[in-house]
Image 1 (spheres, rainbow, N blue to C red):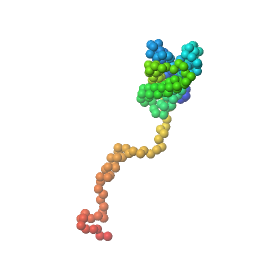
Image 2: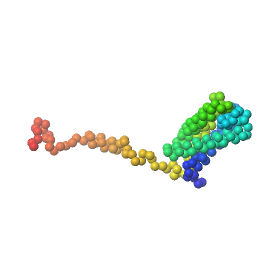
Image 3: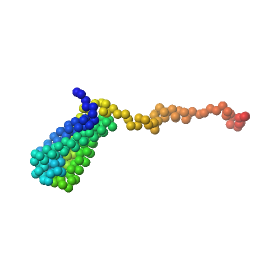
Image 4: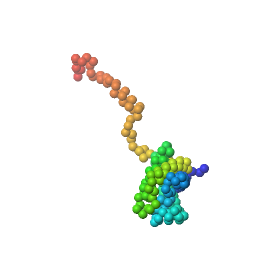
Length: 197
């Protein structure tokens, strides 16, 4: 399979994949009555005046498109993070990013005074956190899998700085040098006599 070699395009693609996974969890949570309302309904509530309007097909489409756009922004961000900090430990990085990014978005959506459909229960918000964690994990794994190696092969920022700490070998040599007693030819071995000049 051909890898994606553009960071923005990779972010858009991985964000869209994360969006699908996030919404599967969100819809399942809503069907199981864990969450009061879907993410789409909450997102649409920022722009429409009532819950009834946000639950119509046009409100759901509006909420889905807003959620997709934010997911793509998140995907671009996670690609930038992986490019700078590496593709190791993908699961913790992805979950951390998803929960953090999602919490900021949820707080932003719920914080608008005009949003009449924001969730008010802890279970709804915990459901959103789980959905956001799944988003972060899925989009991070997708970015690492779909991205070309050249995107993650950046020159270290401190490549031109001299190291400030010695290596073990350098420290060992310093200890050996400091333990050797100097031998001076102009000092007499007899402490009572001073050398003749």
